[in-house]
Image 1 (cartoon, rainbow, N blue to C red):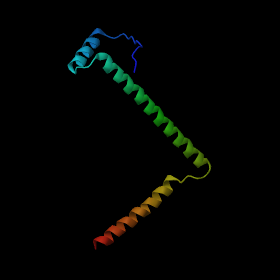
Image 2 (cartoon, rainbow, N blue to C red):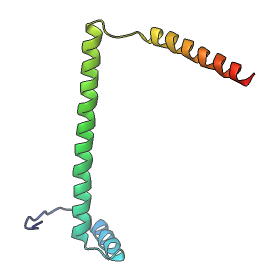
Image 3 (cartoon, rainbow, N blue to C red):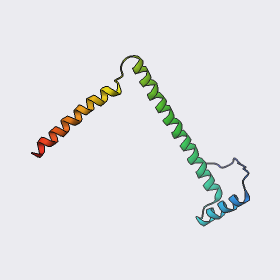
Length: 97
């Protein structure tokens, strides 16, 4: 990929010196590390936005289903799965005998 854009930033001299020293310690150009950091940041932001969109769609779907009467109350779910747990425990107990 062509590298013809210039990015200028201001930072503390101590941070710059420490960064340059650490880049040299791992035998990598500082500009390459900055590019990697920028790529990671951009990727992270894309993933965060995708996840937020996913959650928003899930919430919208749940709200639509609730308004349409297609939802089940938490109490009903708890009652149903308490019954399932009791059945499984009973079967496990019978299998041990």
